[in-house]
Length: 167
Image 1 (spheres, rainbow, N blue to C red):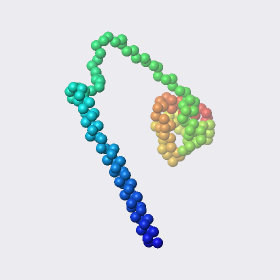
Image 2: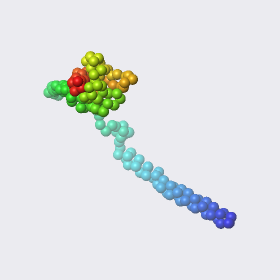
Image 3: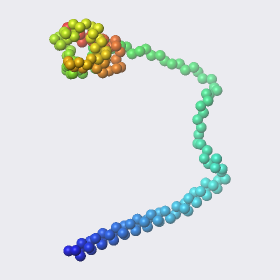
Image 4: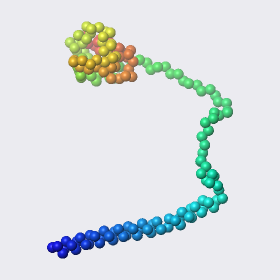
């Protein structure tokens, strides 16, 4: 049994040795012609009677100086600001995510019981809570409903819409 094992080990070692010798042979044959190719390419490059400065000059240039030709004045189109959305549109675009399902303690749209105590505090308190956000034991309201792109007027319009639907 040990004779077979020893024969197996010797054959593995010989196989690895043959593979390594083949690898080195291919490596040497492949790289043997490199110096001749370098000399040939160098000779072709230097044989053009060009100077080093000509061979390494940039391909192009960027001219940052203003053009000396007359140009028509540039007209800038002024667009009107986008029209403000009404309260229902703002509610449908973002507020419905929490106020539609009552997530994080948000009063559901149309639930008179949940809205009554908030409406009793006054419109200014509701506006301030919606614009600035609220953190409390009853839940959390991020500033502007988590959408900083909303204007204060759009947030107030959404509050007015929800209050009108919940009275």
